[in-house]
Image 1 (cartoon, rainbow over the protein chains, first blue to last red):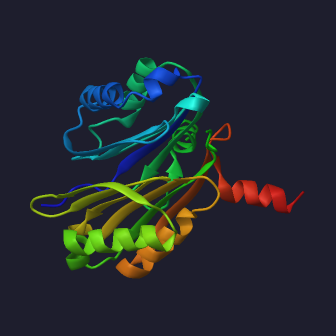
Image 2: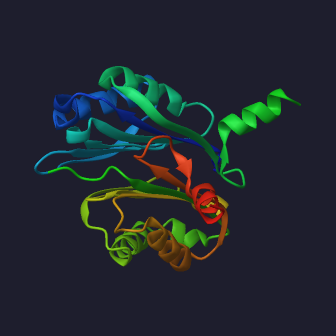
Length: 132
Length: 132
């Protein structure tokens, strides 16, 4: 059986997130699992690491690819990426949920299309399609 | 102590990679660890999953962020991403190593700058700097 290699890969950077949230591995694990559930992804593996003196990295391996977060509590900064293969699971849903759960401000956001030739910005592709 | 939030995030798609390599979780784990070592990253966590009937996802959590691979052996396709924070560890070194170890052809490659405001293409930034 063959699966579609089409996928969407979103990278999202947040600032002004509360230190306490970004340094709480239990809280972050909970919201990461909920983000995966919200977009209908299936979690098949995980790795969470608490850094010293602060900071957390968490990765969920999904049937559809992965969801990761890297935090810098002292900077109020979180770098998130969600990559999902196929057309069903939308990584934007997971990112939107994490933004709402963490708070703060989105300072960087890129959505890329993968697995269909060159890696392209989805916004560019949507614009091109809208203008056709 | 504060750490720099500056980071580089490379996404790389490969085609025409041998089925056997892409479906061999032991081989993939070995080359992923070696890729991390080649670029001087420190591995602090891992999650590898073998899918049925084929396909592997592997993620290494690094002190510097993460390195992941998702394979579609039946399509000869591998989607890799390597995100490293700070200026020392260059994710391009890990990607180059994986390209050499896996073989195949690079069909998609994007290098993004994160943690310094908007998420920008590094090639665009390099071009702008070269033209200044």
